[in-house]
Length: 369
Image 1 (cartoon, rainbow, N blue to C red):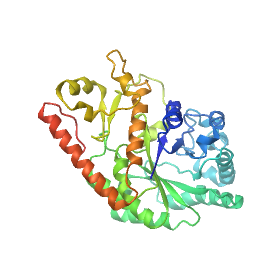
Image 2: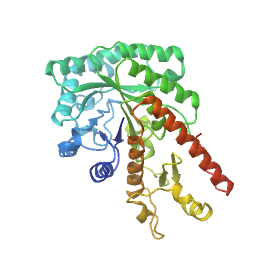
Image 3: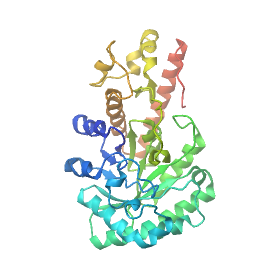
Image 4: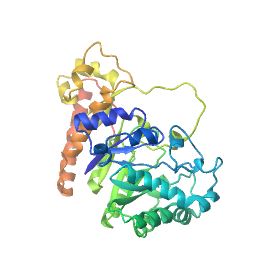
């Protein structure tokens, strides 16, 4: 199973991590953050194992670097409306696919629109405006590349059996796609998903798609990506900031500039499957004799553990440490799904025991188990 960098702000960290540390299998490029020119100038060796998210989620929005991409709807009409797809859909599809082909990405990706509330004709509209024109042009090219469809899975689609079956039947009924770029949208307030029913339904959907012989690439995952692996997806993702580990459409909305609430830097603990706020580090070292079991080595650890290290969310080392440890954790999972399940079962039990040992000396971290 592959693990891709979900890129965003400071994507240079992801690129450096991939090239210098061999962390991850490739990148998912983000046009809201990186311009067409910048992506064009990135090494072909990086792009040929990566793919591109067209981010057509909000066709009217030209946030960030989206205006540099000629396929984006608002470059056709300033106040682009849904009805305008009828006139522009073929040209949008051609330009978007041409960009992906020209950059030698591993896959061709069909974008998806975002709706806060799905319209009653969502599936028909999706097919007419995006899927059919993209497949029509893609098939005319006779490209050997696989083509994958972006699917945003809303919480109500996942948690309702009838809605989930409708979504699954619709996806598996689309002729011409090789797989899906799956994005789970939810409204959980916690940084990590704690709802076991939600996670179980996500596993059911992933497994069902794989049973139907579709490639499944899951974007915007946090540590739950490790759990998703037991359903056999082709890839999961890892991101630096929280908005790259959980999908939120606000990332694509133009807003007035105001004060930014800086996130607290976090240090990844592979044995705990946990991103721990850096402020806990010194307390853990002081109170827990086996603290080195919690914080494993990487080439970034010596610098971060110096007393004078200035922890800040704009420092690269904590993120590169996470990329390196998390990607190695994923790559070490057995290929056989039964063996993978048993390996993770034992790892989760070990993590729970480690939490208990820490709690016995007065260290309490929020568990997700």
